[in-house]
Image (cartoon, rainbow, N blue to C red; front, side, top):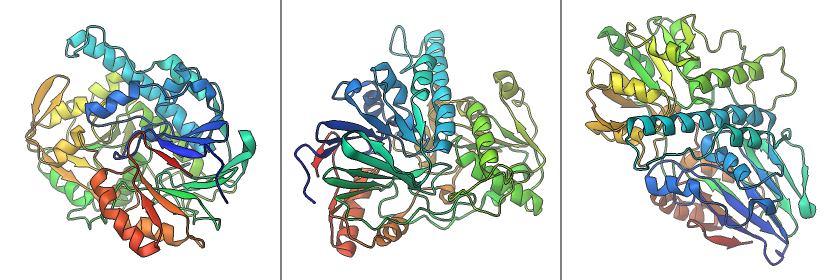
Length: 465
C-alpha cells in the first residue's frame, strides 16, 4: 500500500536516548502524538522538556500513550499548558497509574523549585517548575481509556488499538491503522518472565510499513545475577546496616515487594521492617492490588492467573510512609529495608535517604534496573566516590550493587523473539528508545537475521512512510 504525501513520523525524543519518548505521526492533514514523555539524564536532554512542539498543540488530533512511566507520559501537562485539549488514548490501568505519576511529578517539581529557591543552589534567581498541579489535572481530564484489543476511531479514517506489552500494569503495544500506512509501536516490551504480568502480545499478522521497537538494552543480554537480593539483605542486616532500594514507584516497587515477601515467607531473609517511602508508590500499589484481586477481575489478558492480592506484597512487616513526617521518622530506624523513588535517583525522597545512608559502609544501595547515562544512579553504578545531592557532594562509602535481573525491559533476545513472532515481515524496523551505541550494535544483527531495512533515526529526524 503506498503512503499518501505527508504520511511520516518525526522523532521528537527517544532517538539516541532512552527517555523522552515523543513521536509525531502525520497522515494527510492530520497529526497525532505517539507518546508524550519527559527527557531524563544529562542537562542538555532535560532542557528539551521546556521546548514546545514544532506545531501548535491545538493542531493535534489525538495523543496515544503506551504506558504510565514518566518518560512516556510526563510531557502531557506541558501539552495542556500549550493548549492541547483533545483525547489522550491509553488503557484503563495506564489511566489510573498515569494520573498518579503526573500528580506526583507536578508535586515534586513544585517542591524542588521551592527547595532550590530556599537553599539558593539553583542557577536561576526564581526557579520555576516545568509544570504545576493545575497543568497535571488538566492533562488527566483528557484521558480517554480504551480496553486491550478495541479499535478506537481516529480523525481522518484512522484507528488505533492497544495490545498487552508485559512491561508494567496497563502497558501496551500500539497499532496504528492509518490511511496509507500501518504502524506498530512496541512501547516498552517486557521480557515475558514478569512475576505479575503475562508476556508481550505477538505481532499481529499485517503488512506493516514500520515497526517501532525499543532498544534500551540494544545488543545486550540481561546478565545472570552475580548476587541475589536475598544475599544482599542477609549480609547488610547482619552488619547492622540498612538496605536502600531506589525504585520506580510504578511496577518496580511492586516486583521488589513480591520477591521480598516470597523470600521472607520461605525463611531466606530475616523478617525486618520494610518501608515503602513514596506517596506515588503507595498509590500505585493500590492500583496493582485492585488489578490482581480476583474479586474485581473480569477478563484480564495481561494478569497472571495464579495471583492473590491478599498476600503478594505484604510480608507482615510492610509499612507505607505517606507524609514527610513519616519519612523522617525512620531516619534512626534499626536495620531495615527502604524502597523509595526515584529509580535512577534523579529526584524524590530517595535523595534524602541517600544523603543519610551513603556515607556509612554498613549500608547497601541496591540499583534495580536501567540507569540512564548522566543520572545519579548511573554514577553510583559506575563507582563514583561522591555524588552531588541538593548542592552537596556526598561521599559514597556504602556498598552499591546493581541487580539488572529486576529490569522489565526486553533484551536483545527478547526483541528478536518478538520480531520473530511476525507472520509477515515489515517494510522496516525502526530502533527507538535506545542510546546510539546500543542501536549501532543491534541494527546489523536485525538486518542480517530478518532481512529488512533497520532504521536508527536521529532526534528531530522525519521518516516518510
